[in-house]
Image (cartoon, rainbow, N blue to C red; front, side, top):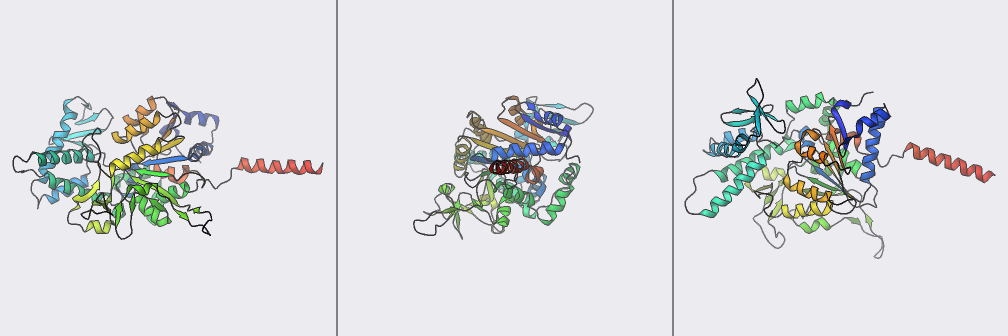
Length: 472
C-alpha cells in the first residue's frame, strides 16, 4: 500500500535528502516510516526534549494563519467602522506605509502575462487599490503581528509627545484588531475553511475529517499521549508554542494532563514565573517515605501570549505582574478586549521585551541551550526573529539537535537557510506526509510501550541458548 508520494516529501540531514537513499535500500515505504519513527524515538529518549509548535498545527481546527492579515479581522474592522469612524482608514494607511518597502526596494516582480506579482519567497500576490493582497486568500499581504507592532510603537510615541491633542484612531484600531483576532483564534467555535478543507482532502487525509468530527482535538491528544510514554526517569518534556489559541489546553483537560504554564491559583490565576520551576509528585506513604512523580505532566509555554491572558487591574502582592488568566467565556464578555495579552510589543528584536515575554523567552533559551537537547519544531516556518536568534544560538552547542517538521519545508526561505548550513544536526522533514502535523501526531510519533520484534527474537534466542547450555 502506498503511504506517500516520494516526489512530494523530503527528509534532510544537513543538506542531504536521505529519503531517496532509504527508499533505494528498501522499496517498502512502511519500513522507511518505521526508520523515521525510530530516529524520532532515539531523540525523544534524550533527557532534554522540547517542541515548538506554530500556526500549522491549528489550521485543521479552523484557525487562520497570521502570516498575512486575516480577511476575517479586516471585515470585522470594516463593520466596526460603522460605529467608530476612521479605524478602517487608519488600518489602510498603516498597511500602505508598511507595504511601501516591498514595492520600492525591488523585492517583487511581475509574473509575465498576468496582473500578479511574486516576491523572493515565491508567494504570489496582486495589487488592489494600492494594497498588496495574497492571490490565493485575498488577504492583505503583510503579517498581522507586524501591523500590531507598528501600531503599538506608534501609539507609545504619540502618547509621549503630548504637545498637541491626538486625532488618530490608533488606540481604537489596536482594540479592534485584538477583538477580531479573538474571534478567529477561538478554535473551539471555528469551522475549517473550504480552502483548507480542500487542501486536507488533496493530501489524502479524509480520515482526518472523520476523526475531527468526533473529537476536534484528537490529533493534539494523540501527540500528547505518545509524548507522555517517554521513560519516567527523564525530565519533563517542554511544549513551546507561538499560537494564541487554546487547542493544547483543551487536549490537556480532555486527557487529564497537568500542565505547568507559569500561572498559579484557582479562582484567580495570576502569572507567577517561579512556577515554571515547580513539579508535581504523589506524597510518600510515611513522613520519611519516598515521593513518586506524577506521570501526566508537561511544561507548557505560550511565547506569544494567549487569548486567555489579560492585563489585570488588581495588582497586589499576589499578582506582582498584573497578568491574569481567565476562561474565554469570561473574556468574551469583556467590553474592552484590548487588554488581551498577545504578541510582544517591542518594535525591533533589539528592544527589551516586557513581562511575561521576557521570562518566557528566557525559559525558551535556557531550556534548549542545555546539554544533550533536542528541539522539534512543528508547523513553524521560522518567520519570528526572536525565536530564530535563540535557536541559532543553541546550534552553537555541539550537542544540540534541531528537527524541523513543516509542510512547506525548504520552500520557505528561512528553513532553506537552515538546510544550506549543511549541518547534520539539522534534520528537516517536509512535504504533505512527513511535514504534516496530522501525520506526525497520528503516525510518526513513536510508541515507547511497543516492544521491538528484533528485541523479542533476541530474547527468545538467548533463552533457548541458555536452556541448552544448562542441559549440557
